[in-house]
Image 1 (cartoon, one colour):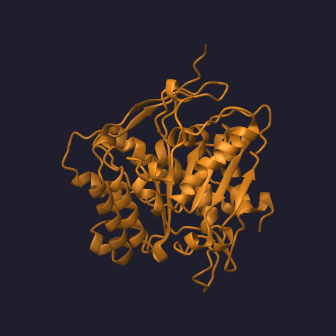
Image 2 (cartoon, rainbow, N blue to C red; image 1 turned 90 degrees about the horizontal axis):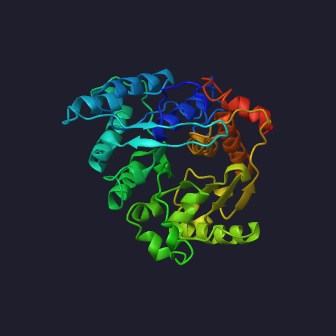
Image 3 (cartoon, rainbow, N blue to C red; image 1 turned 45 degrees about the horizontal axis):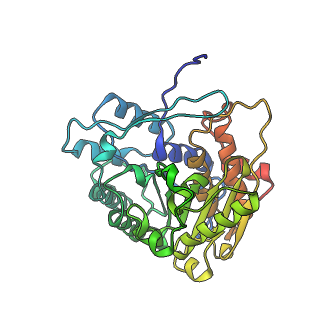
Length: 378
């Protein structure tokens, strides 16, 4: 066994998503008078993390890492100052990365265990106030644009943001955004089913999923839901064993449950097998004005990006980067036209591939223009 060293990075949904979005979306803006046209290379005016940071060295390091990605930390810094618990610690994970790409995880939830919906809603309100009047928020903030996307990650690791509390967060976020914006839920930390129940438990029903104590009440408010195969199996009790055809039958049956619960788009990542995207019908898309209506009613399978045999792989954050890439592609507009779903999925897969490649994951810049040019999309 060998030890090649350690590196401290901003981990988890907030850090990984912010870093990826900042890489993609801070290119030079293109002048346009069309409010419905998002210039290529300037998908978002600003990226704002909302999380609970403790008064400790880990918190200082996290804020510094976020600021180095050019995201706005004013809101989490303001919340940190107002935090009643002066001994609050910042959540910390230790992830051993093995040479073959496998990884482990040792996780201390710390302040994540006390972070609640009231605090999150207060932060969302602060972002809205800052967009309307910087003085009203009482903090320095570079952005005066109303929010237009909300990405929430890892509800299974946030005990006070589950069930009805999670639904409230998504409802408040929707109300705060332009045209209700786009809401994204990225899953991680979903408990595995006990081994002795995997063969005896039947697949859950729609009503079972709607009553799920963690995510059930929020599903109808989610425009884009990302999870992997293991998480799909754990949440729905579907049988992911057998031939590839049998696995796909079970997979699509399980995905359909989320669609029936009202999710707009289900994005399932399958590692080396690529991804599957299933979208809801036109009526559901019309409830979320910023979703590309041309994507409604589509089922799409995409192959993974082929990596060179000598590529050193680090899969930590692969799902976060895929989700961030898909969100950016969903919001991209060129001459008032959205991308087609296949092109958007290609972008998400290539962003994830860029992230898991040890040679490129820590580079600070990958403009969306570069991705589009490589894929010959625009």
